[in-house]
Image (cartoon, rainbow, N blue to C red; front, side, top):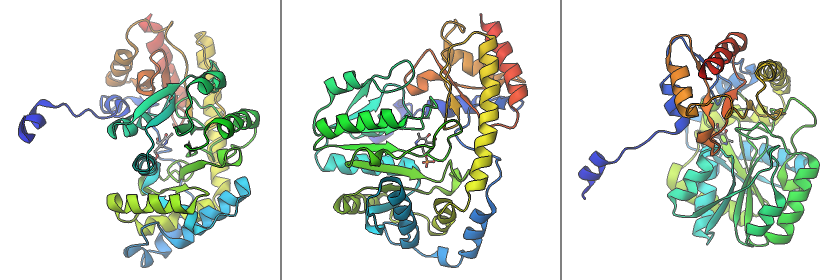
Length: 381
Ligand SMILES: Cc1ncc(COP(=O)(O)O)c(C=O)c1O
């Protein structure tokens, strides 16, 4: 087959989440969003953008703006005590690009297997699969914690393991004990590989302690983080990687320079106030709002006797609806999204868990959305 024939015969699917969102009727309410859309953006972010507009028009270094990298290094030092500097940091175009370039670079350095949680954000599987790497799901317990015993049985010394806390889609935030036990296991067994900790939701914790960085518990951790969620600024596309190993950061920079050249300069200025903690009040408001929405969803789920784990962070809840929605859950989601006055929720199959749906807490229309969702679930019986 030549290029034209392949193009004709291949169906290039969009991610399942996009597919559902595209089927949305204009009058439907979205509980499918992976961003804090229409949330108030902290004025300091706009101020940093506009006051640096002139500086932001040229290229930055391939690794990103030195001032931003230093701010990230300072922030990470507060998390785990290691003496980071700007050479440990690589700015990327969002965490998506950070995951892509870190996995690709590690593959070039010889990594062959990537371990991902059995319930996962879709790109964890897609990216390594695209590079022809072996992707292995490690099991989670029913409370969405990692089944350490099962993990120990499959882990090889030079594996790459992806962890995600606070989690999309489960809302699980690992406790200090859970992080410490995982760190102990990896320190013992993962002696030549790396953990990639996707901590993009680390600022969005609304119940219990704040999220701790996994690098505190395991030295061979590469942290991926960004401002898409904490800044309600997904469209600015700023993320980063940080590692204790300078040469590894250099390898990421070299590889990513081939893909993106440099991250967008002006947008990098906008990230600095978020990382420096100047937008904390705004983030606290997001967390209060998300918590109130979470409580409303839990009340609705309780009224239908649907099983769920209470989320403590990110902005999702991931109930197990398999015994309530007896038809195919993806079909249920498409139908519910596409009818007038419907509601968008994402089928769990998009995250490797067929019996679940993901409900986003990031909406100002939660009351009406839940009335619609409850009715849809009741009618599916
Ligand atoms: C767990 C997780 N990682 C990464 C991303 C991608 O983030 P970014 O917008 O920074 O590329 C998302 C976005 O939804 C996410 O939920």
